[in-house]
Amino acid sequence: MKHVIVLKVGPVQGYIAQARRTRDLWYGSQLLSKLARAMARALTESGATLIFPHPDQVSDTSTGVANKVVAQVESAPEHVARRARDAAKSLLRAEWQRVLEKCEDILIPGAGALAEEQLDSFLEVHAAWAPIEERPHGYADALRESERALEARRGLREFTPWKQLPPEGTHKSSLDGARPSLLRRDRDQGDLWRALRIGLREELDALGVLKRAGGNPGQFVPVPSIGLAAWLQAARERHPVLLTRLADACRAREFQSVSAKSRPWVEAFPYDGQLLLPERWQPYFEEYAVPDARRAAASFGREYVEPLRDAMKSEPFPYVACLVADGDRMGRALEALARRSDGHAAHQHVSRALAGFTQEAKRIVEVEHRGVLVYAGGDDVLAFVTPVDAPACARALAAAFRATLEAALAGTDADVPTLSVGLGIGHVLESLGELLDLGRRAETAAKKAGRNALAILVAKHSGRERLWTAPWDADPVGQLEKDLALLTQDPLPLPLGKVHEVAALARRFPEGSASAPELASLLRDEAGRILARAEAGRALEPLTPADVGLELPTGDAGHASPQEALERWASRLLVADTFDRAGRGLASTKDKGGAR
Image (cartoon, rainbow, N blue to C red; front, side, top):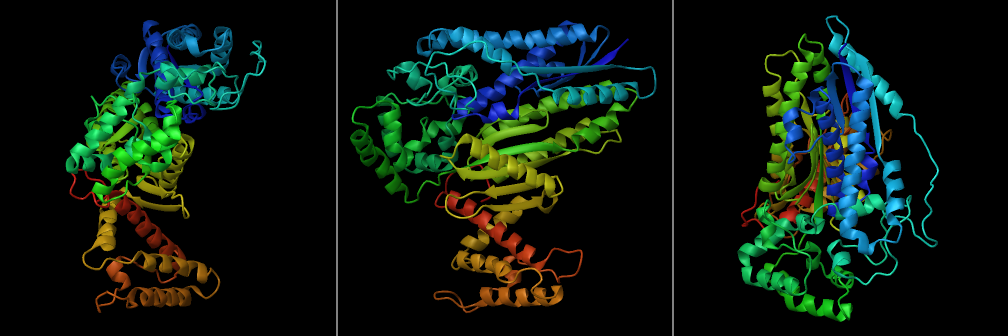
């Protein structure tokens, strides 16, 4: 009898989020994708018919694979599931063995036994299956039953005590504080320590070492370089000699360079962008164990960095966008397809389309919008993008996703899924965990706003967070461009101080301080007064709420309150101001678009 079998490998979110470097984040995602791919291959070798991921995606290692694998098997589902689990475990051990051979000199004696236990206790492979009955919706019913059983099983955890004891005085991992570190205490800061960017006080367990050393050091673009990509490209176009001098100085000091083969925009400055920030000169030189790091860093900054910053006449904007995207109502569409007579074939068709989208996502992020794709598998995307390009990148991903699914679902009754995208804008020196949290909270806000939406969450070092959401149908990127024009129009832009004043109205007149219609009228008049107030150097023609796109409701029941309207307008303008700052002075560069 045929069965539907569903497998999941994890843990996912916690493991990915435990990262200090871009390489930790990227390889953590890649490792989970490799494990899922290994399970899918094992299923195929056992005679199963793959549904998710599509067989073409399994053979194409350049694309990501989601951590959920669905297949149809003829018989012995338990045997097939065990073989898939063993394949995942075998791949994890092979990946560790490869890293162990590279990193043995920096690990404590006996690291192998400790690592084996840590790896075995880390990997979670859950499987469930159900028979496909001979009835109209047999495939759909079996899929639903197996998924329910799988989720129930995942709610149970097995805990086993540690058997391998680390040497006395061993510290816990810096990434999660749970497992003992495998790194030697005596660190000479040799080539390998520097190549892997392991700090003097950093500790890594087997999973941390695997993430840090799993890829090639030169393939990872540091987060500060992504955030400052637009500024660096402008510097390359305007002051190539000064930028080349800076790059030559980095090369002479043997700082880690970045491979730019697949990302042309990295060629502008293939080194860590944090070297453009004065507060990071000394820590960076200390990390590379440069003698007299304080004096050497100050000299480096004066001689190579400050001349470039002065020539540019615009400060680097040290923020980056964490882009998190997720498909809307994918489950509903897949459920509708599953109930067709050719349910599994319809699912395979969608699976192939999603594989194509993952390839398109990489091109959109890395080639068109100066970003780095961390993960794209199925309907999930995680990337970091320079702020100037982030809104346009989000729009392009949403459009590509919808077009892909429209083609895949043509001729069916299933609703076409859409893509909700969150942009979390945070400082480039924030921890990756904080940046990921910003992106995920923004994506959650897009979902709460009704799905098929863009949400932008800006977290400045000074000041409160600002969140703005809008449905894709309302063209939020076009709205941002209009707001940018308001803030930057020549000769007299909308003063940012007036935006803050209007935002403060909601706090001055809380809910319940007057009846709804009266409050709406009062706030409308007060906002109009603030905008119309004359200021030195401005034209006599006063600004009106209509001029700046401020619409206040009447206060009728069932509509947004006037306070909400004020807050939303102010948040939108302050978010636009963030993109204005990101692109200030760079308008003449050959950028890729963005909100400008």
